[in-house]
Image 1 (cartoon, helix red, strand yellow):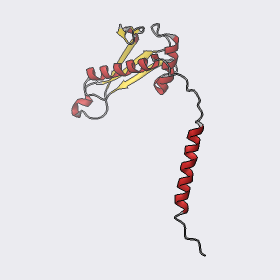
Image 2 (tube, rainbow, N blue to C red):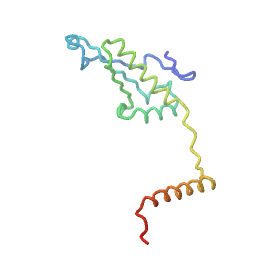
Image 3 (cartoon, rainbow, N blue to C red):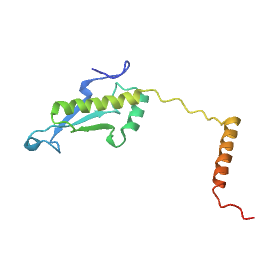
Length: 140
């Protein structure tokens, strides 16, 4: 079991990893070793995720979520398969932790105080006076 939060833990059997050849740097090694990792996690059918977390995770996943509700995370930043596996797993756990975090409290609308309105208008008057003094002098 992989502990995500005190109340949420994932079974390792729910994760499916596919290995493929990575693009990018690596020299001759890139053509013969499958270092890239595709980590798949079935969000919709996971018994370990509470419904609210599952819903937020589907929203956060965006394009990484398939039509069947499978979250696909690709990792090929590192040169070794082990480091790519760890990177993909850490990104999945971070995404689930973000979905499990409580939503921020709703914003309460506030109005500016009378004093702040008057200070703003006084500042505008002063600035207007400074700019008016830059004009050409009045002809007498």
